[in-house]
Length: 560
Ligand SMILES: *[C@@H]1O[C@H](CO)[C@@H](O)[C@H](O)[C@H]1NC(C)=O
Ligand SMILES: *[C@@H]1O[C@H](CO)[C@@H](O)[C@H](O)[C@H]1NC(C)=O
Ligand SMILES: *[C@@H]1O[C@H](CO)[C@@H](O)[C@H](O)[C@H]1NC(C)=O
Ligand SMILES: *[C@@H]1O[C@H](CO)[C@@H](O)[C@H](O)[C@H]1NC(C)=O
Ligand SMILES: *[C@@H]1O[C@H](CO)[C@@H](O)[C@H](O)[C@H]1NC(C)=O
Ligand SMILES: *[C@@H]1O[C@H](CO)[C@@H](O)[C@H](O)[C@H]1NC(C)=O
Ligand SMILES: *[C@@H]1O[C@H](CO)[C@@H](O)[C@H](O)[C@H]1NC(C)=O
Ligand SMILES: *[C@@H]1O[C@H](CO)[C@@H](O)[C@H](O)[C@H]1NC(C)=O
Ligand SMILES: *[C@@H]1O[C@H](CO)[C@@H](O)[C@H](O)[C@H]1NC(C)=O
Ligand SMILES: *[C@@H]1O[C@H](CO)[C@@H](O)[C@H](O)[C@H]1NC(C)=O
Image (cartoon, rainbow, N blue to C red; front, top):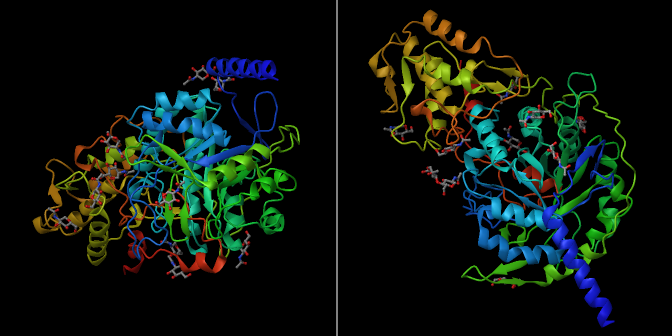
């Protein structure tokens, strides 16, 4: 027996060596399943991997979304500390909710790759770095942020997918935001193709009311053009699902399975692991990795490696010592390890290249998203426009994330009284109406509005002030006809959709110094949850937690 185990150890070492030098297989989506290059079905056996950021608990933040983050893939020592534990857990994917594109990730990404571990990278960031469910838009600043992250990660062989959003839509009356999520998927997919990247495009959804969960999934993978084209479709739909609590039975998944029985792209549980009846037994793993679940789903991500507090309870399966050097595992960890070790999902069906992109869900009172998507955000058009204003936003600090929203509301209110309106900067995902400036970053939208008000009030100095936030620029058009013609020449050549390119500078999105550091115009309503939001899976609760945050464009409609 000794000889045999030594041989086994040698073989393991040889295998490890091989893994070190051979790139990981690309994983592709064929129809509704994932396959590696040998044609073997690929299942996500994953864990969420990100320390929890700071969370301010308030009525404005019902989902306890963090306002900061720590990038675990840029923490070399933390990553090498954790790698043996991730290997012991038996995972082949880690999901990371926020990364910093300006940091170096080489060491951790290559260590994970060497261990056969892929990553799912969420492209959004806390606060202003994600599509705002209360005032949704798909704009240059977000697209630039997403592209910068892709540029940082595209050299690695172990990015399985990029998520364009996490739990942006949390209730039926926020489903208009899906229009912008789908536009993000379209443009990011085109960008990845232009880089020859084989990474998949994903979205991770809250598990809420049936009225919107299935339509949202179907909308993100549908073809508005009716030509069986996947150009606006995600590849990978994630459901943050916490239905299985304690030692449940597979029947808890029956309803969800039925909703996804005809789904056309790959689906998985982007979070699972209910904490309401501890200790967590993780018996859902056996169900998720066998029939009938494997007929609809491609695995899932257990939530979470690191401790994570939430309204639903304390998640996490390890503790890190205060000096950051030692990992202590809990029973949660051991039980999940045992369950993952036993998971043996079927290698079927085999790959079929038949593409099926059905028509989009019809709009009704609980499904608001129009299949007329907003245009691709165009950096060049916005910076051109930004250089034509006789009155401009001139923030005293580059951090404008809390001032842009109130200033926009104020400026649009005043513009309305002066006989104008904010239609040009407004986007409406329900009617599918997008003002020509609606894809620009919030600072450019604000400058546009300041300028409109300045022109509408015949260049009164007091109209270009806004308590010191606006400044007159000389040499720019000072009457409406000339301003409109200058704006048109910036915007005229913009096609509705095109393959975006990387932003001009790696550091920022805007070529205009006074608008760099733009913000989304929300009062901190990013949707980057760093996990555990899907715990509100009881339908009544989801409805009760609709956020009541300050909404910029919502306010515009009250203008006469
Ligand atoms: C990324 O890291 C840089 C360098 O530490 C830091 O200045 C910047 O604020 C970080 N960005 C984000 C979005 O956290
Ligand atoms: C993508 O692949 C094509 C065809 O192999 C090649 O011509 C092109 O240079 C590649 N583009 C990038 C960005 O690597
Ligand atoms: C994976 O796909 C990329 C992009 O298409 C390609 O450059 C690379 O060679 C592929 N890797 C493997 C191991 O097939
Ligand atoms: C709206 O349509 C979706 C299907 O796309 C359906 O699930 C939902 O129940 C409908 N809502 C109403 C109020 O009929
Ligand atoms: C982690 O620390 C918390 C708080 O001290 C404790 O409740 C929990 O049991 C610890 N978990 C592990 C894995 O040691
Ligand atoms: C969010 O705000 C920060 C601080 O003002 C800024 O640096 C960043 O560019 C903004 N991000 C987006 C996507 O607008
Ligand atoms: C920007 O200012 C807001 C409010 O003062 C603050 O919460 C946020 O952390 C700041 N962001 C940066 C990147 O400094
Ligand atoms: C979009 O337009 C519809 C119809 O005019 C309106 O009811 C809805 O409130 C608008 N939505 C937004 C976000 O402005
Ligand atoms: C700019 O606008 C903000 C928000 O209304 C306000 O708090 C601030 O006092 C204004 N002036 C300056 C110089 O920041
Ligand atoms: C969405 O519906 C909830 C009730 O479920 C309501 O409180 C909230 O005001 C609505 N939000 C919008 C944007 O209509």
